[in-house]
Amino acid sequence: MAQVTLMAGIVSLHGKLGEYCYRTCKNGKVILSRMPAKSNKPISEAQKQHRERFRCVVRKVNEVMRDPTQREAMERMYKKQRRKKETLRGFVYRQINSTYSNESV
Image 1 (cartoon, rainbow, N blue to C red):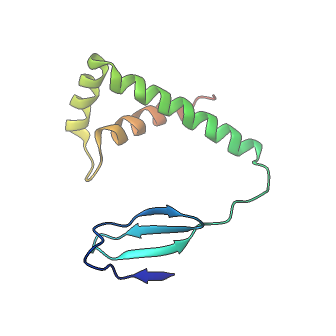
Image 2 (cartoon, rainbow, N blue to C red):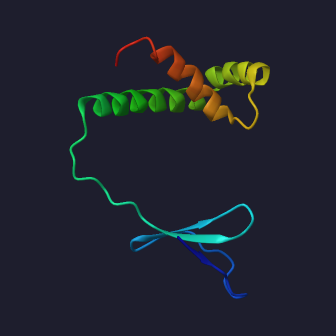
């Protein structure tokens, strides 16, 4: 993994460029890394089920965030149960995902 020292003229550097990815750390250093190689292996049935469940949960989170009544209810719960560094959207995702955990998609 290579590190990049920026010159004064460049303000920011991040993102994908070809097969390399530039990442900016909290301390301001920019790290250059090679993009991971994609696997040619087909995804398993369990992966398909997990992805479908994830899509369903994300769809439901977006519905809750758009609906003012449901969003207010979730905000009240969020303020009571908030974890350190958790966003409202992350809280809603966790709540909805936990309801799907015992159900099949």
